[in-house]
Length: 230
Ligand code: ADP
Ligand code: MG
Image 1 (tube, rainbow, N blue to C red):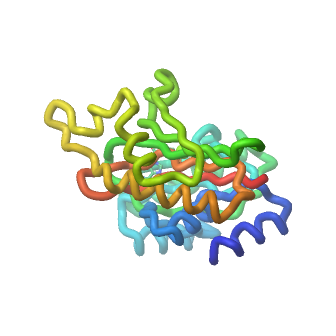
Image 2 (image 1 turned 180 degrees about the vertical axis):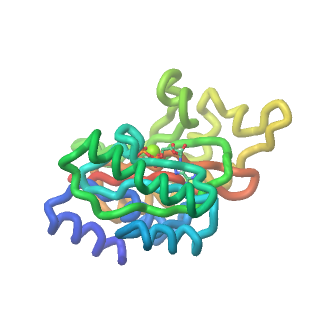
């Protein structure tokens, strides 16, 4: 479905929160690389999609009422075969029944397991006065504890994106550190620029989170995406 339709659809259903598969579809339409995914409506479909995508896969709960999926036991990674997939499916459904019993369940998001990479975050919030601000930082403790992040107001220039990447304290980690390969800076710049474009096209986005993005020596993959509308 096209980005405009996805957003219209959500608003028509009275939702401000776009689920991961919806947010990732929009990112894909802007040319960003996301983990391959399909929404399964039952166990049987989940097993078929897992085979189609190829093990190892990740299962995630799909619900308009669940924003932080792993907080309620709604994410299981590294599912290696059909037996593990059956167990993971059951476990997620049990976790949701226990932790979020009122949640409406759309199904299970089956996706490729992305190889480990350097974790970064691209985010955005809308300020009533200044419009959208884009945030960039390294993932995990760098954002949560060290608050090593940087901001720019949209629309961003390519120079803005380059500066953002280079001005965080953790930049040496991106450059490659103690034998770690360097991360693909151009791909990060590309994701930041495409995010800026997406935000200018859709002023009704109040919050966006691409968290985490795994960055490799060549290319990157958006592993989780969230969009909130005004
Ligand atoms: P949440 O809604 O809790 O933020 P995420 O989709 O971000 O859920 O999943 C939680 C964590 O699981 C991620 O931060 C990442 O470490 C891991 N993960 C999720 N999806 C994948 C994937 N496709 N490949 C590899 N790891 C993943
Ligand atoms: Mg996440």
